[in-house]
Structure formats: C-alpha cells, structure tokens
Amino acid sequence: MFEQLVGKLPVGIGVVDENFNVIYLNDFFLDRLPYELRQNYKETPVTELFQGEGKFLKRRLKSVFVLQHPSFSYWEQRPHIFPFKSSRPITGEETQMYQNMEILPVKDKATGKKLACIFLQDVTAQASYFRAQQKLSEALKKEHEAQRKLIRKLDTAQSQLIQAEKMASTGQLAAGIAHEINNPIGFVNANLNTLAQYASHLISICDGVYSYLENFNDELREQIEALYQSNHYDLLKDDITELIEESTDGLTRVKDIVENLKNFSLENSEGVQTVDICTVCNQLITLISAQYSVPQYKFDCELEKVEVMGNPGPLKQALMNIMINAAQAIHTKGVVKLSVRDSGDKVTIKILDSGCGIPAQNLKRVFEPFFTTKPEGQGQGLGLSVAYTAIEQHQGKISISSKEAKGTVVEISIPKQPSNASSATSEDLSIPSEALPTDTQHA
Amino acid sequence: MSIVLPLDEEQRDALQELLNISMGQAANSLAQLIETKIDISIPKISAVTPGQLYSLLFETEDSFYTRQSFLGDVHGEVMSVLSRAGLTEVAALMDYDDPLSKEDIQEIILELCNILAGACLAGLSDQLELTTNLNMPTLFQPDKSNFDDLKWQHSLVMEVQFVIAISSFSMRVVFCLDDESLARIKDTLDELLA
Image 1 (cartoon, helix red, strand yellow):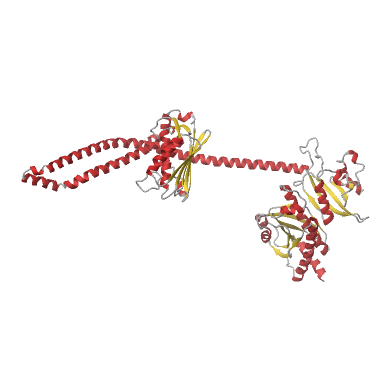
Image 2 (spheres, each protein chain N blue to C red):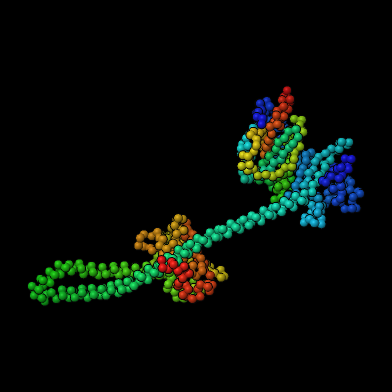
C-alpha cells in the first residue's frame, strides 16, 4: 500500500545509491521519462537519465553522502534542475517546470547501504505568480519614479515662471523710468554744456580785465581789485570748472544707469541677424582685458565660426555683463575662460572664472534685478538680470553655479535658429511686456 | 509566559563543551567537502533581548544573512551572518565557475549555511540525544524595527564563528532557542551532569 501511495504522491521521489545510480523513481519522475526508458531505468546514473544540471546534482548528492545532512535547492536560484516541461503544457505561459528540490540522506534497513532520497516539488504556479508580482512592483516603481520626476519638473517650471514674471514686470518698470529720466537728462546735459561754455567766457572776460589792470587809473584799479577780492575770484575761477566737470561726470553716470535700464528692457534692438559668437567673444575679451588687466583671459572653441540667429546688441550686452562680473571676481590672480561649443541645433557658451565665488544664499538671487553685493554706487545690480532677459528672449537658458573661493561658471545655451513664434521681427523682441496682462501696464 | 532562567555555571560549561564538539564536527564536515582548513571560535552562550539579538547579528552592510528554523524535540532558529569578502574563493572551492551570478551567490550562501548550521545542530542533538529536523534556509535582511516587534523577551543564543583559513571569508552561526526548548535542554543537561 505504501509503495502505491509513494508512487502516486504529487511530488517527485527518487532514490539513488552512492554511485548516483537510480534505485527507485515514483510516478512523478517516471511520467516525465522518455517512453523507451521507463522499463529499464534502474541502475542507470540519475545524471544520465535526466540531463540538464548534472554537475550541480552530482555536487549536491556528494555533499549529502559526505555530510549525511539534507540539502536544499530553490527555484529562485536554480529553477530547472530536471529538464521537465511545465505542468501546464497547453495553457501555461511557462515552458519549463520550476522546481524546489530537497535531498535527504537515508539508509537501507536491509543492507545498511547509504542512499539519498530526492524530493522534487513543482512550484511553477508559485514561481509564475511571484514573477508576475515582481514585474508589477517594478512597473509601479518605474511609474512612481516618473511621477516624481514630473513633479520636480513642475517645480522648476513654476520657479522659472515666477522668475520670468518678476523680470518682465521689473523690465517694464525700468523702461518706463528710463524714458521719464531721459528727457530731463537731455536738457540738463545740454544746459550744462552751454553753462560750461558760458563759464569759460566769463572767466576769460574777467581774466582779460585783470590783465589790463595796469592801464586803469589807481582809483579804478583799487575798486576792481576790491571787487575781485570780495567775490573770491581766484577760488571761484578754480572751483567753477571743477564743479561743472563733476556735474558732467555725475550726469554721465546717470545716463549710464538709464542706458542700462533700457538695455534691461531691451528696447534698443537692431533686429534679428546672424551673429558669430566667436567674433563677439574675442571682441569682448579685447574690450574687457583693457579695463580689467588682472585676470588671464582664455578663449576655447573648436570651430572658427559659430553662428546663431539673434539680436547682436542684447547678446553682446549679456555676455559682456557676465564677463565683467567674472573679471571683477578676480582680485589678485586668476583665469577667465570662455568656451563655445556647437552642439547641432544650439550653442553652449561657458564663462568660467577662478575668482571669489558667490555665497550659496546669494546664488538664488543673482538674476534678480537690483540685487548687488557691490558697495553703493559701484553697481546697480542689473548686469545679470539684463543677461537673463536677453538670453531668455533668445529662447536660451542661463544657469550659474559657484563655489566660494573656488570660482563661478555661467552656462548659456541658445538655439541657433529661434522658433518663429516670438522672434520673427525685432519688434517682438523689444516689447516683451506685451505678453503680460494689461493691468500691470497701468500699475 | 515563563521566565527565562539563566543557565547555572555547570549547565553553561556543559553546553559550551557540547557545542564545542558539535561545532568541531561541523567544521570538519565542511572542511571535508571543500577540502580546506577551517578554524572555529570558542562558542559564546548568552541570554539576549530582541534588541541585543539585532545588534549581535547586524554588523555591516557587507554581509549576507540567512535564517533557518528547526523543529523536533527542541524548536528554534539558526541565523547566519556571512562575510561578502572571500566568497569568491569559497565558491571556487565549492566547484562553482567564475564569474558568479547573483543566483550563484545566493545558492552558495544558502548551501554554506545549510551545511554548517545542519552539522552543528545534528552534532548537538546527537549528544543531547534529541531529534531535530532542520527546514530550508532562506535569505533575509535584519531590520531593526522588525526585531523590536518580536513577541519574546529573552532568548538563549549560542554563537560560533567559522573562518576559512585560505581566504578572508568568515561566517557566524547563531542558534536561538524558544523558552520551552530551553527548559528541555536544561533538563537534558542536568541528566547528563547527574
């Protein structure tokens, strides 16, 4: 009865001797043997009957005989020890049977011979279920990752939008102010020039009178000298020129500021044309190295010419502002390096300096209009905002990274051919604020 | 639940000696199979809380962990900690081909644990005249929070370390017994000592 029971058990049971020769196989094994082998399988090595993982099976059997201790094997690590077909040959998706194996040391009671009993379990169903679960969890993980990426993207987009809006409204304001200030500056400048001329005429009259002083009679001469002295003519003569010069200087500075403000709003546009970035960079290096001679300047580009369609004024202004910052960051010794890379449909410009760097807390604000760390009167905090707006309007990107005491890198990438939507004409470029809601224009 | 009584000195010494013998046998078995010399440490016996067990087991990121339960006259679990270092040499000794796949490594780890834990348990049961059956080993990753959630308060642990002389490979085997089994072991030890 037991023999029948063992024969019909839904697990594979096989017994082998120390030479790995088969002594017994139950129906589970026999059903899967080739038909012609079913009658005379006994005394044949198990590894010959079931070819597949022969080496592994031998090793495990050896270990069981040597150690007299059970050995286990799992489908996860070694799925198909015996070359059996799936238990679902018609409908199943698995073609080979997944197996768990256990080998137990046993002893023949009659002869005292050492034997090993192989138990084989068909775990194809569990395995395929497990694998399906794993696939599902992987898919979920991927989806989750994609969503997180999307959220990050949205976050960046939002902050960019906020930044762009800030820039646009400030730009509009700046343009308004610049326009308002420009008129008074115009006549003050003209008047000051005339005033300077008048002053020099007056001085020559006075000097002329003074040189003819000997020709006057004593009474008149004394009266004139007294007049000169009571009005402090010597002081007045020295001071008046200086005062006018200082005012002219001041006015020039005001004009510069207004000019920058106008640049910031990019109202002066020459229209879209082909700009060779290499030429622009070389021009800038010449220009800036004259003013800032401390740093060493390097230019790096594999090509002789890298052309983009753009607005030369704002582009130059943007690069110039960034380069001036780089040059100013170097106090004693260092390098400013410009490199231009052509990557097919866009151009990447890197401005690298080995200067003092930007503290992390300031890094977020460098593109903000009027943000500056320079002493009052030495910077308006417009340089990088101007650059930002200019690059933005060329549909490019500008990013900055910096480490204190190490240096700063500004990376700009602009498309060679801006899409027509916003840059078909120069007018589009010059009036960025039109895209804004109208209420801010009156604000 | 019953309170875990610590073993008295005599019982502890006896158990340590028995462990020493069975561990030696285990090391011998493995040495025979992979044909190399294996050193073992003196077994340590102690009572631990779940938290202590966790810190006993969890060393570094650079280890593999397995567990295996045993049933029979005494119940418990064997946990093993295997070093990642030196595993390739051991694999070569065990007749595995280089390079090892992830599955190969898992299989080697499970087999090593099965051999060593099995041999230790068999030796110990033999000497205490107890019958035990070891179940399949599985890989696991000890997690602190899981250990804190364990239902028991104290457990007897027996710990031994195997070092394979020719490589940097080392492995620790930790036996844990439940309360009932501890009482049974104590009775058996007393019988032996009487």
